[in-house]
Length: 211
Image (cartoon, rainbow, N blue to C red):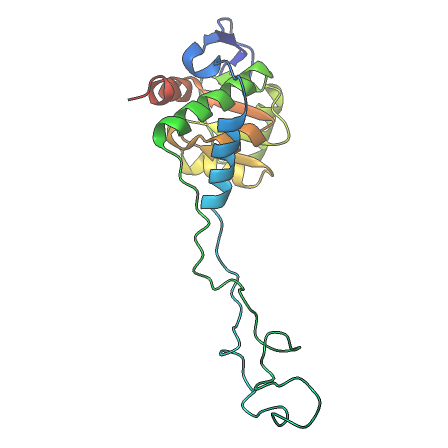
């Protein structure tokens, strides 16, 4: 299937590149698998930083607030009781929780193909012969403008170069990845996907079949 193709300077190429239909033209009957892969990506990148102190870990509370009997009030042994202000937290996060989601490789490949197919059907995909960067941000920005890439851009190249990383680092909402790291989250969130001819071929090799 043909797609918008540009040469290295950003002008439209005379011959349109053909993308692998098994990767970029897959029928998406429902979004259940896409949602699973999307949620798994977020969950597996979640940092477990929430930690609270239990009643035994809060300082103070060594003295009994009042005597056991005769006051007419409920009996308490410590002011660090969870129902007291300043007390410990009952059933709070300990920092040992596991929030990761597991998804097998075959399902991940299928979900990535579905995401790329939806992006291609929406006209978000651009293929460029190659991206040769000198490290200057202005040059990369001008090239992206020429090919109609805007807002959140996902650039897929066969090999990342220090110059391309440096040039894209000063542009907001741009992510540069290699074909092996293309995922559902980045694909669905991108407004434009720019991939080189070599990267498109590498994606077809990686996602074209389930081994």
